[in-house]
Amino acid sequence: MGIFDFVKSAGEKVLGAATAGNTAGALLDHLKSKGLAGPDVKVAFDPATAKATIVGSTLSQADKEKLILALGNVEGVEKVEDGLLAEKPEAGASFYTVKKGDTLSTIAKALYGKAGAYMKIFEANKPLLKDPDHIYPGQVLRIPAHD
Image 1 (tube, rainbow, N blue to C red):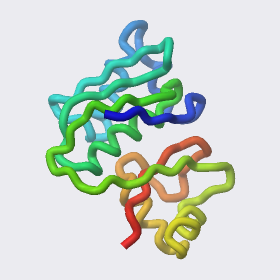
Image 2 (cartoon, helix red, strand yellow):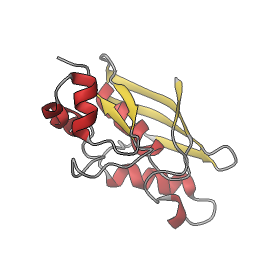
Image 3 (cartoon, helix red, strand yellow):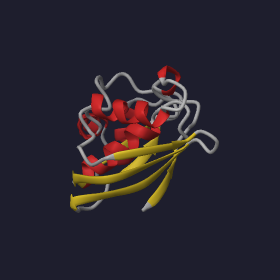
Image 4 (cartoon, rainbow, N blue to C red):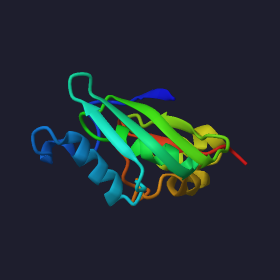
């Protein structure tokens, strides 16, 4: 179990549409809309601390990381407490917080030594990213290990 930090003021606007007292439900619906949450995934949210807690199991480490990122990249969420268990554990990816002026190509060039490796980052972040040209400052991305 770990706690991951995110930029509270950046991300998808999910919580604004939540009815009073159902923020955890809105977050879970958000995960389901991305095709990430299985039947045993549960989410809790404490608005006072802006912390989301997620528990349950996933098939892979990549799925686990995508769930954490999908929660953390919601405006209003500052921390995600991970209580997920990956059924097929494997080496985890690193996380990268997008800065102003970043593109997937510049991130790939800095981390992998070649801008053309941006598709590796894009693929590692599907379905969280729909277009490699649409990232924003404060967004946190999965960065898979370099081959």
